[in-house]
Each structure stands twice: as C-alpha cells, then as structure tokens.
Image (cartoon, rainbow, N blue to C red; front, side, top):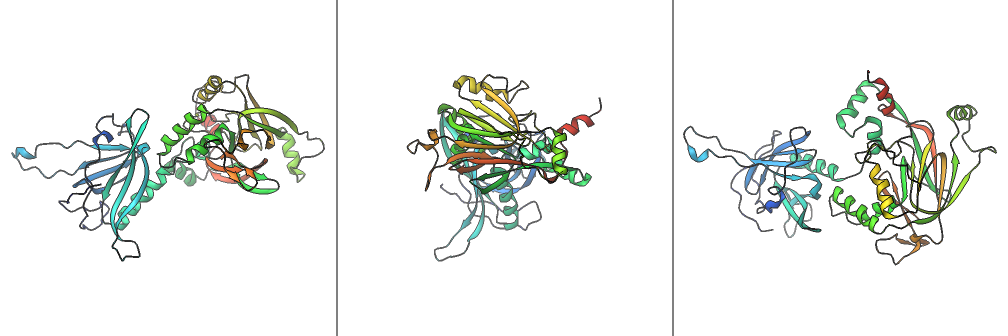
Length: 424
C-alpha cells in the first residue's frame, strides 16, 4: 500500500518509552466502519487498551470481545480557541472481519535476522459487493516490542476460532474470569473422555465428533483459512448444504448399561464388554453422524448439541441423521438454535452408547477422488473428514470411539448442578 510520512511520536500506555514510529499506511477504505452500524460497546469486555499510530494519527486503541476501536488523541483545547472545538469520530473494525495478523518489520538487503519492529498489520476481509469479498490491510504502528507482542498474542488467540464446547459445558460460557473463579473456589468436576482409534492404532483423545456433514463442512472451512473464522464457517456450511449428499456406512454400537450396572462393573475392575453385552449394527445412507460424550453447549446450540448427555455418567450420545431432503435437514439444523426438540424428526435417531464403530462403505461418496473440495487422496485410498472438537481429523478406514468414564478432573461445575443451586 502507498505510504505517507508520519507527523508525531507514539508510545504505549503500559509505561513504554516514546520512540519514533515508521510511516503509516494510507487510509483504509471507509466502508470498514462508516457504512455499517457499530457493534454495541458498552456491555463488551475490554481485552486490551493502548496507543498506536494509525494513518498518521496517534490513536487511543481499544480491543474488546467483538471489535477493535480507535480514536485520535485530541490536543488540549485552549480557552476560546474555536479551531480546536471539534470531535473526531471513533472508527472500528469488527473482529469477525479480520482473517490474519502479523508483526510488521523493516528488513535491509543483507539482514539475516528479524528486522526493526514497526508494529502490527491486520488483514481484513470486506464485502465489496453482494457475494464478493475484498481483502485490505490496516497498520497499527508502535516500536515497542513488548507492547506489540502483547497485542499480537491476543489477536492470534482471538483468530484461532475454535469453539470450546468443553468450557461452555462446564461453565455455561467461554470466559476467563469465570474459569478463574472456579479455580479459586476449588470446584472440581470429573469429565468423561473419548478415545479415537483405527485398526488398532490410537488417533487422539476428544469429547465430541461429527462424521458426514459436520466433517465435510469443517474440511471446506480449513481450505479457506484466509477468511475470518465466522465467515469461513458460514461459507463452509452453506457450501456443504449446497452439495449435501449422504455417506453410505455401517455403524456398530454397544448400548449403555444403566449407572448401577456401570458401578458394579467398575467395582469388578473391568469396563470391557462381556458375553451379555450385545453389539447392535445399522447400515444405510447417513447425512450426519454425531458422537458426543458431553452436552456440547455452544453459542449456536444453547441447549447443547447433545442436551441429554452428562459430563460424567460414562455414556455417549449417538445421533444419526438418515438421508432426507435438503429442506428437512436444514430444519433439523435450525432446531439447535431454539428450545424445540432438534431430534423430533422421522429421519433422526438417537442412542445412548458406550462404544461406537463407524465403517464407511465401499460405495461412499468419500471414495470419489474427482470431487471438488472432497476428501484427500492417501497412499491407501481416499480419507474421510471428521470434526473432532472443532479440529479436522482425516481417516481412511473405520473409526472406533470409546468413552472412558471420569478420566480427567477439571475446574468447574456441571450445568445440571448449577440449575439445582439456583434458589426458587
């Protein structure tokens, strides 16, 4: 971007010394902040506050949970001097429009190590026209290494974009202060954990997984990392719905024994299946398969993705969406955001289980290497995308999921306990 000359000095509010700042970028298009309504700032938690030079002005910059705001620092107004009697409008960028951030440095031709720090550059994705996006940049200039490092780490944390369903299920919200209070008060909560394995090989630990629509949507989102987290997930969900197709697979599961029976088996020192345990199997075409060991509360599902599951009862929810029309499947997805029963559809089946095995069929669409944005080719064939706790896991064969009751202890309280604690 073209550069202009700076006109002043800038320092951090956190006690850093004043230093000369490099040239700032020219104005970023005003559509960033002027044309839309500002996000409500009064009720937002302020994460950071400091001083940066933005477009030649020294600005008071505030980073909140939803937006980055700045306003030029006003000079003192001498009494009666009317030329200073003006207010500069606060400008802002919503965090959902920021898709990347990096430390900005000046390098010389022969320089091998990192150059002189200039500040931070934000990469922004704008709506240019309907269904069209345009990228732009905004430079936050400050020469303080410590000051920029704090802001850079906070931006990187925000842009990670992973949905922490475990924190929501424990605390009802992903909030650092809430988690800290649980630590101070010593609230300990045992939590069930799942293991994921294939052909006898351990893959990872986790709490929730989705195969089919949920896995394909995440795989699409991962291919568009240049977008902001919210934008790429919205884009991926819409694209996955447009290409909605079922996966042919075989699902085997071990039904969950009642808690009393589970305690008796634990007292005997074994939780393995015995001769009385009967594995059940279903085959067919499925749009989505969800396996949840915790309720998975989140902003898009206030009742949880698996509202009937508990944190520590040794069971998992197996939720299967059989093949149906796109409008009916969308109705099912929309129910997650409401208080209505999202499983009250003829094509949705729910089971309470201890173990699950998902084996993709030979005729599954996952084995079509020519499909655009489809599963990746591996040395042994096509791999199938899984969404495990918001992380992409690609597996080419059967996946075995098993729950391990109360495997870890975390700070927090279950949402069920909190409901009973509220006075009537």
